[in-house]
Length: 187
Image 1 (cartoon, rainbow, N blue to C red):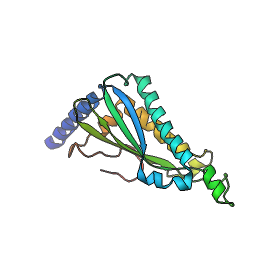
Image 2 (image 1 turned 90 degrees about the horizontal axis):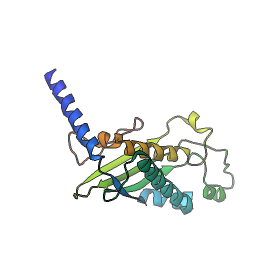
Image 3 (image 1 turned 60 degrees about the vertical axis):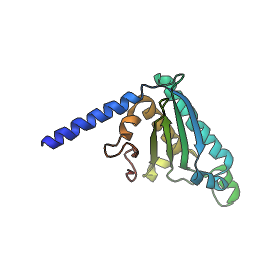
Image 4 (image 1 turned 45 degrees about the vertical axis):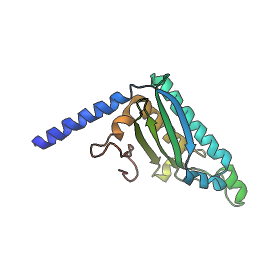
C-alpha cells in the first residue's frame, strides 16, 4: 500500500513538473510531412496532403494564441504529420477510380509526431494519434473529418498543457506515449 501511495505521489510530481514546462511559450511551429504520408501523395493527391499540413499548423498556432501559450523567444515545436486517413475519397482518388463514389465512406484519423525544442537545448518527443473505430460515426462526414478532429484535439491538449503531462513517462523521459484513449497503446 505504501509503495502505491509513493508511486502516486511520484507520478503527481512528475506531471506537475511536466506541466510546468508548458509555461515556456512556444515561439515557432513547423510542420513537415512524414515519409509514410508522402508515399500516399500519389494516392490522395499532393495538394490534399499539403492542405492537411497547413491546417495542422494553423490549428496549433490558433490554440497556442488563444490560451496565451505562444510568445517570443520560446520553444520551437517541430511536428511531423506522419499519417492521415480520409473518411471519404479525395478528388484524386475519385479521378483515378471511375467506379468510386463520394458517397463511399470509412473510418479516418491521423498520427502526429514531433518534438518540442526548448531554449536551453533539450527537447521532448511528442506523439499523438487518433483513428475512428466506429464506422457509424463516419456516415455524415466530409473527406478529412477525423484527421482534422485529431488536429484540433492535439492542438487543444498541447495548448492547455495536457499533452505535456501525458507525455511524461516515469520509466524513461526519452520515450513518448500515446495520449489518446483509442487504438493500441504506444510506449
